[in-house]
Length: 128
Length: 287
Image (cartoon, rainbow over all chains, first blue to last red; front, top):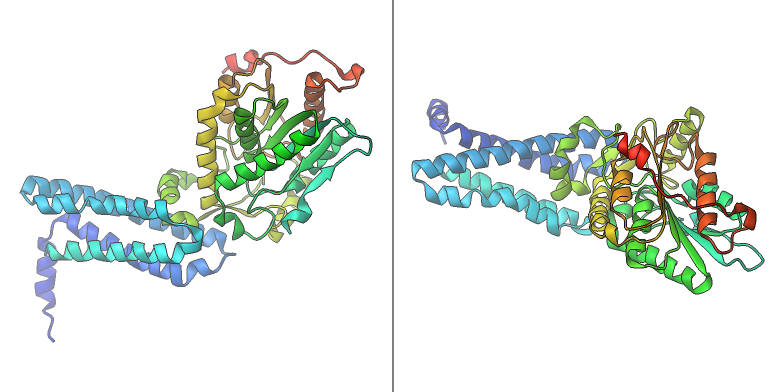
């Protein structure tokens, strides 16, 4: 299958900045959680290292939340009420998951978190 | 492992007054032992038990909730009230919050020693990226992230600091980090305690280091201003950090606590009966 890179770049350049931010932060968060879950957090002794890794995830979460708010508001003015209504759900999901999570089921809830991030990424991509 | 760290100092002749001590967050009864010994020497029976999740492996502390700490502490308190005429409570850090919470529910608590009361995490060793804490606390990240414990380990005394650092590497007597899930539960306990602080009627002695590295004096001042106790005293320590029961002024802390408890006890030796403390407005008004 031939992928026209110039065509892809052209499409990306036409995307709203807020959507680009959602896609980038989403991909980085998914990768961060997967790497963290599979490799980093298994080492209980590397406290300092995964403390800083968690801070990076927090920064990405902040970026993700800001871009969702930005994207939702700009869509509201652009007349895309559906996106404005759906995307804010992803603002609350990490906190809802966090509320129900427990240490015993941390891997299960981490998977749920990754899954919701994938869904929000697919939704963001569907806008293209 | 946890149970081996518990201690009970009981006099042979039947003593009528007891002190139940609570250790701090991620600590163990080890840190209260010197205080326990001092109180025992002053004719109190003294008890201190490992709080759920503490004194074992760092993983166990992530599985407990604040209700577990509270129900376990309450159970020990109720057991002592069956055996003793007077039961006093004392605690350090989170232990102080537990003591105050129990006193808000049980009016018959005879007196409280509240040391380095940790209602807020706002000390000077809290990392610079602390502003992310709400995000870490309320998402799945709280089960992954831990605040690394760092110098000065709550101690101004440098010789002691080295010993404690070595103990923390073993992760039994004390942990070398504060798991975020544990902080989450502490802050929930703290909110519950703050809400019920007005119900505390028992006499309270508060001691807090001016330079506390983990929690500022704000917590103790909050308690001082919000309890309904007619007898209350607030002392700021000049030469200690968070672990006031181990640091440079520990003897002052022990002696002041004993003097305070004796002033409230009907079984105190006559020579030790001194007028009770009343106010600390001078310190608070100076702010």
